[in-house]
Length: 305
Length: 265
Image (cartoon, rainbow over all chains, first blue to last red; front, side, top):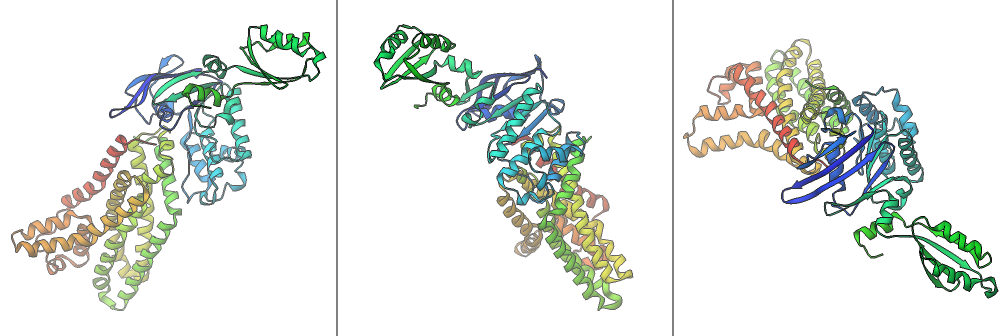
């Protein structure tokens, strides 16, 4: 599986449009995150991909070919539902053994996967005694057993502690590295922003945008920010430096006290560094700040910061 | 033809149910009560079966439907509650396979429970009488499997496990207790307007009623039925098979139809 695309997917429940002509695509080695308020349509799109909801219109394409969501396609999927739990009367090992066998994976793989998600010590214990985070880890183990080409995660960070999050990050990194795909829905933008390649923003069943964070940042007009701490000594050429930045056409500066904040156009940081180099004593320190996914999301949804 | 996932699901369901504490508890209660009835029958000497047979049949017709519905009432709604129904259906499995695999796995667990209960009762009754009691097993299994299918239907309809539990109690009360009383009331209230034959047919249309008639006619003959007011001829084998088949297949088909149409979270 090298590419996956959901094209013009429309899902209607009665008169309500849960999804309206939404299109997203993903390439091998990419992580796509769907975001949006509750009921925006991200989970519905996930269910279309799982074959749980039949769309009224639209298609799923794998490597460019229209692909029905049949048992053959399902064999390449690993799924982690939101806030998953499992039967209380079984042990973690028994739960995972069932999903391993159901996916045609040898039971010998079970201890290794349980170890991978940090549940080796609790493998034989009944799920009844598992905490929320342990159940989520078991859900992760179920999703990754058999190493599916497409991992579908619904709110994967829910209930995970620091150690559990490390496990999740390592899984995301491995799937990227091995040129597999991850398709996930989450509200945790800040946690996941360095780990996603594409972000799809949904609102009221409509896909507002779907692109890489850099492209989305550019499309909504959010700029990289540089905060320069200026020298307090007027002999250091501070005035000349501020004038030079103001004359420079690729950044808008705002001076507050000794701090000059510059909103930079994409890729213009080096030019600002050149200006600084020409006034070596004027600037004592510099900090750069990328617009976060939260800021992009708020801008797209027009939520006041 | 059932696929690999379905076959593994049968085994999974069987193991899961055997480990469920509610199932263990209700099976133990059934086994103990059945053994107690058997032990009491020993005091009757040669007439033990005539005494314990009907008592055991009544006990079974009360308890086995409840045990069966306890076994199956959370089959679908439990998966929904745990957010695992979507996970299950994301595997290479069709929805009818999920219904059938869950039914077979749980049906096998019920068979273990019934065989253990009646087996213990027959051991207590002794070799000769025990052999007669063991003959109750096939009809008891049919009774259990019919109510297991009803439990599956309840599980498919319900939106939460607690509403499924409530519905189980209501269905159990209506079919096991209230139905015969209601027919009796109908007979008296209509003062013979509704024929005995119609009433008899209505009795055997209910799985609990059919079980009682089947078992009593086997243990005590048609005379025992006549003493209970069943003046019509006992139902034929084909009719009995049709009624049991309908009670088992019907609810499962409806469960499948509901699962196919309801949104899965």
